[in-house]
Length: 220
Image (tube, rainbow, N blue to C red; front, top):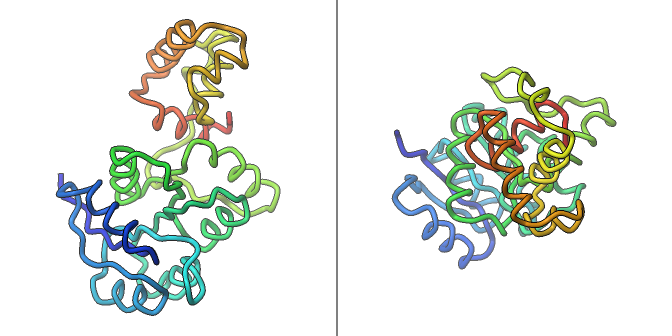
């Protein structure tokens, strides 16, 4: 697997260093920017595969960087990495052309997975954001970004019991096993059993794939 070439845009040096440390040698870092001008200049010079883009920065924010370069560099993929999970921030950057939006609470392993998926042309959201992103685009009449090579199908949905569907939706929305158990008045062990059945029946490997499947089939 070829390591994606990544450019990091964030106004905090510690965040940039943390991203580099978490992703390590699994990606190739080609540069970084701390504000809009340095980001625009650096991305133009390096033409990365993926830009990890902070939303709020001095000089206009990540959306300004994206809108400045999107037409000029159509092959560059944009993934927002932000502390904000506000609907207006998410919708604005996705409408500007980002292929995904994840929050800074994401683990290093999940961030690497998100970078690879965006580099491959997929769409990635943190689980709690996917539902209202789809709702906002549907209500606003604008098309949300679609995966480039995957069509919406739901052949496995009929295999799920009513309880498994409830667990599936809560898992896809990012709830923990304990939170799901509290909401459905079942034990954590029972939630784990249902979650295992859901992934097996849908032929999915993990929660990220489940969120993507549920979003594609408008089940969030």
